[in-house]
Image 1: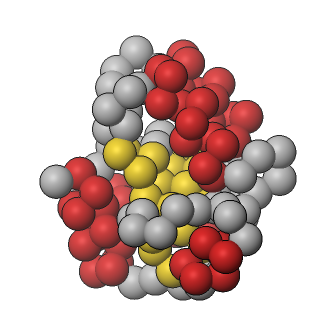
Image 2 (image 1 turned 120 degrees about the vertical axis):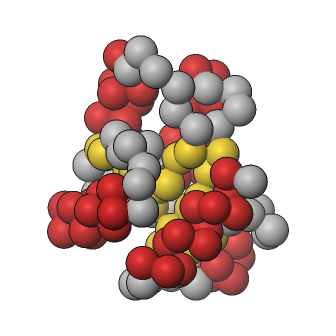
Length: 116
């Protein structure tokens, strides 16, 4: 599942993930993601989410999705550096983090690492 509030980044990242061979459930907001996840009949293995979004942050979204999918893996992404995000208490250190903007190869590596 991909959650990104910027429509351009959402579309680009969806295309990148599909090019890598993944089935992608895309959502433009945390609440849309929760609705899609609740209605989805399959298994969601990975959450790739922006950290800072309106409504709730990526960490809060992940906590809610873990109720539905306890084995959910996660990769957080942001235009801010991991140090800045961690400093503001948004993420723990040592998490899977992808700095925006990113290339297809960087995305592929982070997704594989998270799913391994």
